[in-house]
Image 1 (cartoon, rainbow, N blue to C red):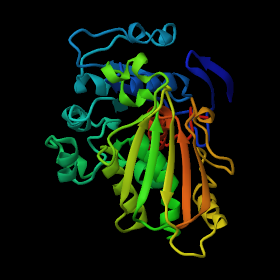
Image 2 (image 1 turned 120 degrees about the vertical axis):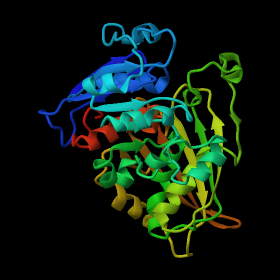
Image 3 (image 1 turned 180 degrees about the horizontal axis):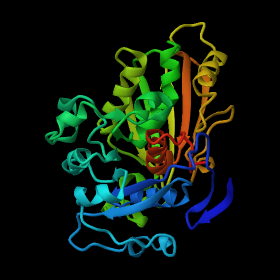
Length: 365
Protein backbone atom coordinates (compact mmCIF):
# COMPACT_ATOMS: atom_id res chain seq x y z
CA UNK A 1 0.00 0.00 0.00
CA UNK A 2 1.17 3.49 -0.84
CA UNK A 3 0.47 5.84 2.04
CA UNK A 4 0.12 9.58 2.28
CA UNK A 5 0.07 10.42 -1.42
CA UNK A 6 -0.98 14.06 -1.63
CA UNK A 7 -2.38 16.33 -4.31
CA UNK A 8 -3.45 19.95 -4.20
CA UNK A 9 -6.97 18.63 -3.64
CA UNK A 10 -6.09 16.65 -0.50
CA UNK A 11 -4.40 13.49 0.72
CA UNK A 12 -5.34 10.03 -0.45
CA UNK A 13 -4.31 6.52 0.47
CA UNK A 14 -4.31 4.16 -2.48
CA UNK A 15 -3.51 0.46 -2.64
CA UNK A 16 -3.57 -2.44 -5.00
CA UNK A 17 -6.60 -3.97 -3.32
CA UNK A 18 -8.10 -7.44 -3.50
CA UNK A 19 -7.94 -9.44 -6.69
CA UNK A 20 -5.20 -7.31 -8.25
CA UNK A 21 -3.67 -9.06 -11.26
CA UNK A 22 -0.06 -7.87 -11.78
CA UNK A 23 0.08 -9.57 -15.19
CA UNK A 24 -2.71 -7.36 -16.54
CA UNK A 25 -2.14 -3.91 -18.00
CA UNK A 26 -5.27 -1.96 -18.87
CA UNK A 27 -4.89 0.80 -21.43
CA UNK A 28 -7.51 3.47 -20.81
CA UNK A 29 -8.80 6.16 -23.13
CA UNK A 30 -10.88 9.09 -21.97
CA UNK A 31 -13.25 10.99 -24.23
CA UNK A 32 -13.92 14.44 -22.81
CA UNK A 33 -11.06 14.63 -20.29
CA UNK A 34 -11.19 18.38 -19.72
CA UNK A 35 -14.04 18.33 -17.18
CA UNK A 36 -13.90 17.44 -13.49
CA UNK A 37 -14.69 13.76 -14.02
CA UNK A 38 -11.92 13.63 -16.60
CA UNK A 39 -9.41 15.11 -14.18
CA UNK A 40 -10.24 12.64 -11.44
CA UNK A 41 -10.15 9.71 -13.81
CA UNK A 42 -6.66 10.69 -14.89
CA UNK A 43 -5.58 11.25 -11.29
CA UNK A 44 -6.86 7.84 -10.20
CA UNK A 45 -5.54 5.98 -13.24
CA UNK A 46 -2.08 7.44 -12.67
CA UNK A 47 -2.12 5.74 -9.25
CA UNK A 48 -3.54 2.45 -10.48
CA UNK A 49 -1.12 -0.51 -10.33
CA UNK A 50 -2.45 -2.16 -13.50
CA UNK A 51 -3.70 0.69 -15.70
CA UNK A 52 -2.36 3.55 -17.75
CA UNK A 53 -3.82 6.57 -19.48
CA UNK A 54 -3.07 5.85 -23.13
CA UNK A 55 -5.33 8.18 -25.13
CA UNK A 56 -7.13 11.45 -24.43
CA UNK A 57 -9.77 12.37 -26.99
CA UNK A 58 -11.74 15.56 -27.48
CA UNK A 59 -14.19 16.99 -29.98
CA UNK A 60 -12.80 20.50 -29.44
CA UNK A 61 -11.57 22.36 -32.48
CA UNK A 62 -8.34 23.20 -30.67
CA UNK A 63 -6.92 20.12 -28.95
CA UNK A 64 -5.20 21.08 -25.68
CA UNK A 65 -2.45 19.49 -23.64
CA UNK A 66 -4.22 18.19 -20.55
CA UNK A 67 -1.65 19.77 -18.19
CA UNK A 68 -2.61 23.16 -19.60
CA UNK A 69 -6.18 22.55 -18.51
CA UNK A 70 -5.22 21.05 -15.14
CA UNK A 71 -1.86 22.38 -13.84
CA UNK A 72 -1.98 19.75 -11.06
CA UNK A 73 -1.09 17.19 -13.73
CA UNK A 74 2.18 18.83 -14.71
CA UNK A 75 4.98 16.30 -14.47
CA UNK A 76 2.46 13.49 -14.06
CA UNK A 77 0.42 13.46 -17.28
CA UNK A 78 1.12 15.85 -20.14
CA UNK A 79 -0.69 14.09 -22.96
CA UNK A 80 -2.21 16.21 -25.68
CA UNK A 81 -5.80 15.52 -26.63
CA UNK A 82 -6.38 13.91 -30.00
CA UNK A 83 -9.41 13.49 -32.24
CA UNK A 84 -12.11 10.96 -31.37
CA UNK A 85 -11.16 8.20 -33.80
CA UNK A 86 -12.31 4.68 -32.81
CA UNK A 87 -10.07 2.98 -35.38
CA UNK A 88 -6.99 4.61 -33.86
CA UNK A 89 -8.16 4.33 -30.27
CA UNK A 90 -8.71 0.56 -30.44
CA UNK A 91 -5.02 0.12 -31.27
CA UNK A 92 -4.00 2.01 -28.13
CA UNK A 93 -6.75 1.31 -25.59
CA UNK A 94 -8.75 -1.52 -24.04
CA UNK A 95 -11.43 0.56 -22.35
CA UNK A 96 -12.93 3.97 -23.03
CA UNK A 97 -14.37 6.30 -20.40
CA UNK A 98 -16.86 8.69 -21.95
CA UNK A 99 -16.99 11.88 -19.88
CA UNK A 100 -19.45 13.74 -22.07
CA UNK A 101 -22.77 15.45 -21.41
CA UNK A 102 -25.98 13.53 -21.96
CA UNK A 103 -27.00 13.53 -25.64
CA UNK A 104 -23.33 13.69 -26.69
CA UNK A 105 -22.16 10.35 -25.27
CA UNK A 106 -24.55 8.17 -27.27
CA UNK A 107 -23.24 9.77 -30.46
CA UNK A 108 -19.83 8.14 -29.86
CA UNK A 109 -20.47 4.98 -27.83
CA UNK A 110 -21.77 2.79 -30.70
CA UNK A 111 -18.61 3.32 -32.75
CA UNK A 112 -16.46 2.39 -29.74
CA UNK A 113 -18.38 -0.83 -29.20
CA UNK A 114 -18.27 -1.65 -32.91
CA UNK A 115 -14.45 -1.85 -32.80
CA UNK A 116 -14.60 -4.01 -29.63
CA UNK A 117 -13.60 -1.34 -27.16
CA UNK A 118 -15.28 -1.72 -23.77
CA UNK A 119 -17.00 1.40 -22.47
CA UNK A 120 -17.72 2.97 -19.10
CA UNK A 121 -20.08 5.86 -19.78
CA UNK A 122 -20.23 8.62 -17.17
CA UNK A 123 -23.12 10.45 -18.84
CA UNK A 124 -26.80 9.73 -18.26
CA UNK A 125 -27.39 8.26 -21.72
CA UNK A 126 -27.45 4.59 -20.68
CA UNK A 127 -28.65 4.79 -17.06
CA UNK A 128 -32.40 4.69 -17.65
CA UNK A 129 -33.44 1.37 -19.13
CA UNK A 130 -36.67 2.78 -20.60
CA UNK A 131 -35.86 4.82 -23.72
CA UNK A 132 -39.20 6.64 -23.58
CA UNK A 133 -38.54 7.66 -19.99
CA UNK A 134 -35.07 8.90 -20.98
CA UNK A 135 -36.58 11.00 -23.76
CA UNK A 136 -39.14 12.46 -21.37
CA UNK A 137 -36.57 13.28 -18.68
CA UNK A 138 -33.77 14.57 -20.91
CA UNK A 139 -35.96 16.08 -23.64
CA UNK A 140 -34.07 14.49 -26.51
CA UNK A 141 -34.45 11.37 -28.66
CA UNK A 142 -32.42 8.36 -27.61
CA UNK A 143 -30.39 7.48 -30.69
CA UNK A 144 -28.79 4.23 -29.48
CA UNK A 145 -31.62 2.02 -28.26
CA UNK A 146 -29.84 -1.12 -29.42
CA UNK A 147 -26.97 -0.65 -26.98
CA UNK A 148 -29.21 0.76 -24.27
CA UNK A 149 -30.85 -2.65 -24.11
CA UNK A 150 -27.54 -4.28 -23.17
CA UNK A 151 -26.05 -1.60 -20.92
CA UNK A 152 -25.35 -2.62 -17.32
CA UNK A 153 -25.99 -0.20 -14.46
CA UNK A 154 -22.62 0.19 -12.80
CA UNK A 155 -23.26 0.19 -9.07
CA UNK A 156 -20.82 -2.56 -7.99
CA UNK A 157 -22.27 -3.22 -4.55
CA UNK A 158 -25.61 -4.10 -6.15
CA UNK A 159 -24.76 -5.37 -9.64
CA UNK A 160 -21.24 -6.81 -9.41
CA UNK A 161 -21.89 -10.00 -11.40
CA UNK A 162 -23.51 -8.14 -14.28
CA UNK A 163 -20.64 -5.64 -14.45
CA UNK A 164 -17.98 -8.36 -14.63
CA UNK A 165 -19.21 -9.54 -18.02
CA UNK A 166 -20.28 -6.20 -19.47
CA UNK A 167 -19.01 -4.38 -22.54
CA UNK A 168 -21.00 -1.21 -21.76
CA UNK A 169 -21.41 0.03 -18.20
CA UNK A 170 -23.56 3.03 -17.31
CA UNK A 171 -21.83 4.74 -14.41
CA UNK A 172 -24.52 5.88 -11.93
CA UNK A 173 -25.25 9.45 -11.01
CA UNK A 174 -23.76 10.82 -7.81
CA UNK A 175 -27.04 11.39 -5.96
CA UNK A 176 -28.51 8.01 -7.06
CA UNK A 177 -25.41 6.15 -5.83
CA UNK A 178 -25.86 7.35 -2.26
CA UNK A 179 -29.63 6.86 -2.31
CA UNK A 180 -29.42 3.30 -3.68
CA UNK A 181 -26.80 2.23 -1.16
CA UNK A 182 -28.76 3.82 1.68
CA UNK A 183 -32.13 2.27 0.92
CA UNK A 184 -31.67 -0.98 -1.02
CA UNK A 185 -30.97 -3.32 1.94
CA UNK A 186 -33.95 -1.94 3.86
CA UNK A 187 -36.29 -2.36 0.89
CA UNK A 188 -34.99 -5.85 0.12
CA UNK A 189 -35.87 -6.95 3.67
CA UNK A 190 -39.23 -5.11 3.65
CA UNK A 191 -38.18 -3.09 6.69
CA UNK A 192 -39.41 0.20 5.22
CA UNK A 193 -42.40 1.22 3.14
CA UNK A 194 -41.68 1.77 -0.56
CA UNK A 195 -43.74 4.95 -0.81
CA UNK A 196 -43.58 8.45 0.71
CA UNK A 197 -39.77 8.38 0.76
CA UNK A 198 -38.26 11.86 1.05
CA UNK A 199 -34.61 12.34 0.11
CA UNK A 200 -33.01 15.63 1.14
CA UNK A 201 -29.61 15.74 -0.55
CA UNK A 202 -26.87 18.36 -0.58
CA UNK A 203 -23.92 18.43 -2.98
CA UNK A 204 -20.80 20.46 -3.55
CA UNK A 205 -20.66 22.69 -6.62
CA UNK A 206 -18.45 20.34 -8.68
CA UNK A 207 -21.62 18.32 -9.22
CA UNK A 208 -22.79 21.08 -11.56
CA UNK A 209 -19.83 20.55 -13.87
CA UNK A 210 -16.91 22.71 -14.99
CA UNK A 211 -18.69 24.96 -17.47
CA UNK A 212 -19.14 28.49 -16.07
CA UNK A 213 -22.65 29.32 -14.87
CA UNK A 214 -23.69 32.67 -13.30
CA UNK A 215 -25.32 31.13 -10.22
CA UNK A 216 -22.17 29.13 -9.46
CA UNK A 217 -19.75 32.06 -9.32
CA UNK A 218 -17.96 32.32 -5.99
CA UNK A 219 -19.90 35.41 -4.76
CA UNK A 220 -23.17 33.59 -5.43
CA UNK A 221 -22.22 30.28 -3.78
CA UNK A 222 -20.05 31.38 -0.87
CA UNK A 223 -21.93 31.49 2.47
CA UNK A 224 -25.07 30.35 0.64
CA UNK A 225 -27.22 27.24 0.87
CA UNK A 226 -30.21 26.66 -1.38
CA UNK A 227 -32.52 24.01 -2.77
CA UNK A 228 -33.19 23.50 -6.46
CA UNK A 229 -35.20 21.28 -8.83
CA UNK A 230 -37.55 20.12 -6.06
CA UNK A 231 -39.23 16.94 -7.32
CA UNK A 232 -38.09 17.60 -10.89
CA UNK A 233 -34.39 16.70 -10.81
CA UNK A 234 -33.26 14.28 -13.52
CA UNK A 235 -31.83 11.92 -10.92
CA UNK A 236 -35.23 11.20 -9.36
CA UNK A 237 -36.30 8.68 -12.07
CA UNK A 238 -32.88 7.02 -11.86
CA UNK A 239 -33.23 6.66 -8.09
CA UNK A 240 -36.73 5.19 -8.43
CA UNK A 241 -35.58 2.78 -11.15
CA UNK A 242 -32.78 1.30 -9.03
CA UNK A 243 -34.81 1.10 -5.85
CA UNK A 244 -37.75 -0.50 -7.66
CA UNK A 245 -35.39 -3.07 -9.15
CA UNK A 246 -33.94 -3.85 -5.74
CA UNK A 247 -37.37 -4.07 -4.13
CA UNK A 248 -38.92 -6.07 -6.97
CA UNK A 249 -41.87 -3.68 -7.17
CA UNK A 250 -42.55 0.02 -7.54
CA UNK A 251 -40.82 2.51 -5.24
CA UNK A 252 -41.63 6.22 -5.24
CA UNK A 253 -39.51 9.03 -3.85
CA UNK A 254 -39.51 12.79 -3.52
CA UNK A 255 -35.98 13.98 -4.23
CA UNK A 256 -34.97 17.47 -3.11
CA UNK A 257 -31.37 18.47 -3.95
CA UNK A 258 -29.49 21.36 -2.36
CA UNK A 259 -26.31 23.21 -3.27
CA UNK A 260 -23.62 23.29 -0.59
CA UNK A 261 -20.97 26.07 -0.51
CA UNK A 262 -18.16 23.49 -0.79
CA UNK A 263 -16.42 22.07 -3.84
CA UNK A 264 -16.95 18.34 -3.16
CA UNK A 265 -19.14 16.00 -1.16
CA UNK A 266 -22.72 14.74 -0.91
CA UNK A 267 -24.79 14.23 2.22
CA UNK A 268 -28.23 12.67 1.93
CA UNK A 269 -30.75 12.60 4.76
CA UNK A 270 -33.61 10.26 3.89
CA UNK A 271 -36.96 10.04 5.68
CA UNK A 272 -39.05 6.90 5.32
CA UNK A 273 -41.72 5.01 7.24
CA UNK A 274 -41.03 1.63 8.87
CA UNK A 275 -42.96 -1.24 7.35
CA UNK A 276 -44.25 -2.52 10.71
CA UNK A 277 -44.44 -1.35 14.29
CA UNK A 278 -42.03 -4.04 15.44
CA UNK A 279 -39.12 -2.93 13.21
CA UNK A 280 -36.21 -1.81 15.39
CA UNK A 281 -33.07 0.19 14.78
CA UNK A 282 -31.10 -3.01 15.35
CA UNK A 283 -33.04 -4.62 12.49
CA UNK A 284 -32.03 -1.75 10.22
CA UNK A 285 -28.36 -2.02 11.12
CA UNK A 286 -28.47 -5.79 10.72
CA UNK A 287 -29.72 -5.32 7.15
CA UNK A 288 -26.83 -2.94 6.43
CA UNK A 289 -24.28 -5.25 8.00
CA UNK A 290 -25.52 -8.25 6.04
CA UNK A 291 -25.53 -6.31 2.77
CA UNK A 292 -22.22 -4.50 3.14
CA UNK A 293 -20.15 -6.49 5.62
CA UNK A 294 -17.85 -7.68 2.84
CA UNK A 295 -17.93 -4.49 0.80
CA UNK A 296 -14.73 -2.46 0.79
CA UNK A 297 -16.30 0.89 -0.01
CA UNK A 298 -19.41 1.02 2.17
CA UNK A 299 -18.77 1.89 5.80
CA UNK A 300 -21.70 1.26 8.13
CA UNK A 301 -21.21 3.29 11.29
CA UNK A 302 -22.96 4.33 14.47
CA UNK A 303 -22.03 8.01 14.23
CA UNK A 304 -23.75 10.27 11.71
CA UNK A 305 -21.77 10.67 8.46
CA UNK A 306 -19.81 13.78 7.56
CA UNK A 307 -18.71 14.69 4.03
CA UNK A 308 -15.31 15.69 5.41
CA UNK A 309 -14.63 12.05 6.28
CA UNK A 310 -15.26 10.73 2.74
CA UNK A 311 -13.51 13.47 0.78
CA UNK A 312 -10.90 12.13 -1.66
CA UNK A 313 -12.05 8.54 -1.10
CA UNK A 314 -14.29 6.00 -2.80
CA UNK A 315 -16.19 5.33 0.43
CA UNK A 316 -19.88 5.81 1.10
CA UNK A 317 -20.61 6.15 4.83
CA UNK A 318 -24.02 5.03 6.10
CA UNK A 319 -25.91 5.38 9.37
CA UNK A 320 -29.55 4.99 10.36
CA UNK A 321 -31.85 6.07 13.17
CA UNK A 322 -35.32 5.05 14.33
CA UNK A 323 -36.89 8.28 15.56
CA UNK A 324 -40.01 8.69 17.67
CA UNK A 325 -42.19 11.61 16.58
CA UNK A 326 -45.59 12.94 17.62
CA UNK A 327 -47.00 11.39 14.44
CA UNK A 328 -45.36 8.01 14.97
CA UNK A 329 -41.99 6.45 14.25
CA UNK A 330 -39.79 7.49 11.36
CA UNK A 331 -36.69 5.85 9.87
CA UNK A 332 -33.96 8.35 9.01
CA UNK A 333 -31.07 7.12 6.86
CA UNK A 334 -27.86 9.09 6.29
CA UNK A 335 -25.35 8.67 3.46
CA UNK A 336 -22.17 10.59 2.67
CA UNK A 337 -19.83 10.29 -0.33
CA UNK A 338 -17.41 12.30 -2.42
CA UNK A 339 -19.47 13.18 -5.49
CA UNK A 340 -16.39 13.20 -7.73
CA UNK A 341 -15.00 9.85 -6.51
CA UNK A 342 -17.65 7.34 -5.39
CA UNK A 343 -20.21 9.51 -7.15
CA UNK A 344 -18.32 9.56 -10.46
CA UNK A 345 -14.70 8.80 -11.36
CA UNK A 346 -13.81 6.46 -8.49
CA UNK A 347 -16.87 4.33 -9.16
CA UNK A 348 -15.93 4.29 -12.86
CA UNK A 349 -12.52 2.86 -11.89
CA UNK A 350 -14.27 0.36 -9.64
CA UNK A 351 -16.34 -0.73 -12.64
CA UNK A 352 -13.27 -0.97 -14.86
CA UNK A 353 -11.59 -3.18 -12.26
CA UNK A 354 -14.51 -5.59 -12.34
CA UNK A 355 -14.72 -5.60 -16.12
CA UNK A 356 -11.03 -6.54 -16.37
CA UNK A 357 -10.86 -8.97 -13.46
CA UNK A 358 -8.83 -6.69 -11.22
CA UNK A 359 -11.00 -7.05 -8.14
CA UNK A 360 -13.08 -4.11 -7.05
CA UNK A 361 -10.54 -2.11 -5.11
CA UNK A 362 -7.37 -1.94 -7.22
CA UNK A 363 -6.00 1.58 -7.14
CA UNK A 364 -8.73 2.83 -4.82
CA UNK A 365 -7.63 1.88 -1.31
